[in-house]
Image 1 (tube, chains in turn red, yellow):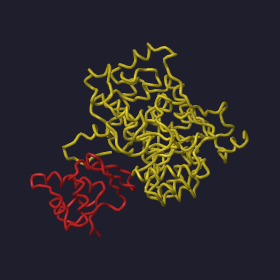
Image 2 (cartoon, one colour; image 1 turned 90 degrees about the vertical axis):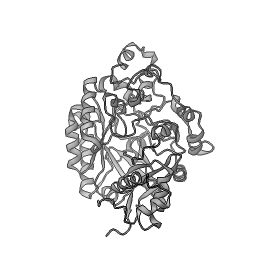
Image 3 (spheres, one colour; image 1 turned 60 degrees about the vertical axis):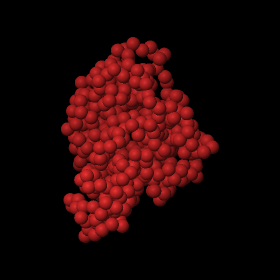
Image 4 (cartoon, one colour; image 1 turned 30 degrees about the vertical axis):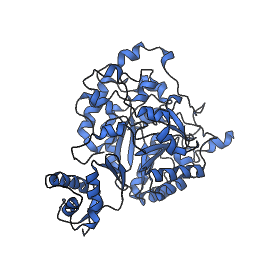
Length: 92
Length: 388
């Protein structure tokens, strides 16, 4: 799997379901049968904004992620990308 | 299960106080089985005449879809002996509820294997309790090893990658862990080890079959070395008290994030706890499964902070959390004390000191009074039709 690039456009993978929880959300991938935890509401908002933003970084900013928080959120997205939970929208 | 790291909330606390819907649940579709494994946790054998109908099962799936339960683990008994089994699998996956099912492999024909390989929403667990015919068949019955291996061959031939080879670890097979791994690898499957519970008929053989303290240590080291390559379903969290935690949530999810629906629709806290003490309600009750999950007295009680009793002063409590509720219950130990297999040895004097009368008997038993005539009968229900 390609490394996560926050400058590229991303989206939730088609086989992934999100379920809102008091702590954030659960994400389940029906293909790999893996479960991930989105541990803050803000991360859920970031993931939900991915399809409408030109890059993952813009999705973070649009969801209210501050400059200080950005590295942690990009690491979280990189983790989701590594597990196939989010995919590059324009990947060949 | 691994997680995305944003160091904010302690997820475990959320899970211990319960979710509005289970993440997944075990759903035993029938008590009928063509095998008679000596450690069967649901004491299966005969079908129960009150088992849920096809329509009733579909209504439960509808509820699970509304609750966004991600997947069900169909089991039994042998779930594939239900005539509507594939209909229910299709119905669930068609309603955004993923399916894993556990089988002894007897109905995994080449055609079934091809069909499974074509679906991304169905996963299969083949049960095998010995890496050799001799060890397996002593637990699961004559012929069962060959049937399971044939099923794995058919899945591999059909191109089904990543099915699970599901093994209950016992004193008889604990020396075969590498051989199990090799078997799973050979057929393109993934090994899944689970803990022997003293549930169902397992209560009768637990004293003889549960791994010794030395074997538990060996198992822990082996699992640590495997990392996430070997699945455990969070089965061995009591072993985490040896040191570093094993992969997974390491908590008891009973009635909090998981539960069991049995073939007659009874909802229990977990698959290893088929007993009135852990019965929360029935899916046929008013309000259905949703109300049982969200409002039953038992589940609400399980979601309150639990007393850790004798374990509260133990430095390892944060890792093992007192172990498995069902293991304690069915060995006659207090629920707020140590696990019978506590790695510090705190369970052993309690086990030695209990009286037979302290040990609850499983309340539900569908065992056959005699073993099946032929374990690999072409029609696993033939025996049932005969007795009417």
